[in-house]
Image 1 (cartoon, rainbow, N blue to C red):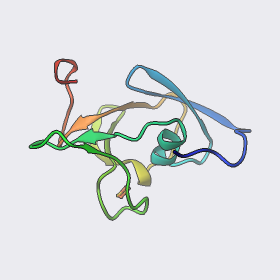
Image 2: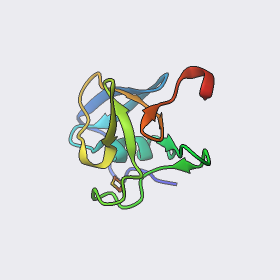
Image 3: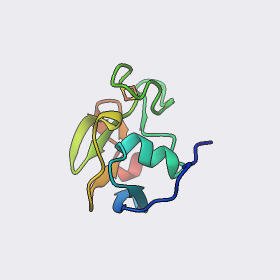
Length: 100
Ligand code: FES
């Protein structure tokens, strides 16, 4: 669905769940995950519907994600860092392994 138009020349390694993601220095977390093929960042509490980035400018809050154990952060407004740990969340709380 999404792909990079330029190759990565300044790689930054991070993890989304159990998967290693290699991003470009300066990428937003949302852009890095989308480029890696990740489109679901969280689930809705009531319906369990899948949510992912929509606006990419901080307005919709559909990109909420857990970054380094801090939930409810907007992936489109945070820049990747080496060793960053990312996790999906359910509503305003983190998804526990039994719920996935
Ligand atoms: S994609 Fe809309 S707030 Fe992040």
